[in-house]
Image 1 (cartoon, rainbow, N blue to C red):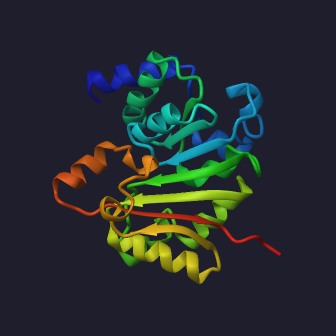
Image 2: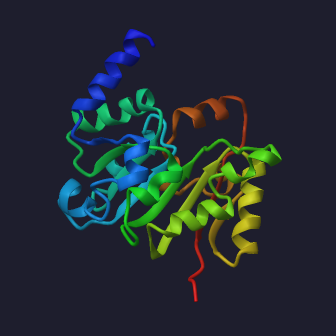
Length: 225
């Protein structure tokens, strides 16, 4: 591991906005903050929004800047990448932003039912190979796992360069009776005035430089009987 990574991991230990927990502890006991994010971490009752697979945290920070009336948590397992977002939020004294270093499939060990009101999934690996289909962040099992932490009226956003994942997700959402609130196969042509979609991640910039089209879906999970 390079010196720069060592430095970033050391910094992460000092950031008040960074939460880290060993996988074994989460599986056995859950995160101590589970059910207590409002009271003990943010110290307010503003809605909590997650960015799953946040990378360097550009979207988390960008949303936090635009919506001071909400709390935002970027989630990823790559601590060296998350350092950038945590550093920016710390330097700019953004107290409505946090970062959680964990695997996405463990978020139900980190949040209580109804603790999260919104989710952003930004440029995830589309996991195109059939044998990897369960790893797609909009796969049916993943959506049901998100349900365990979401409010009943929670909104989920998917922003991706992958036409495959865009089409797959529309099929899953409609096929399972969930509700599509908005959809665009090309946000530059169809949603150019949407401020939410103007935030750019490092990956989005790379994809745009390659001439790739950016897509978007906004949806809600159906209510269970």
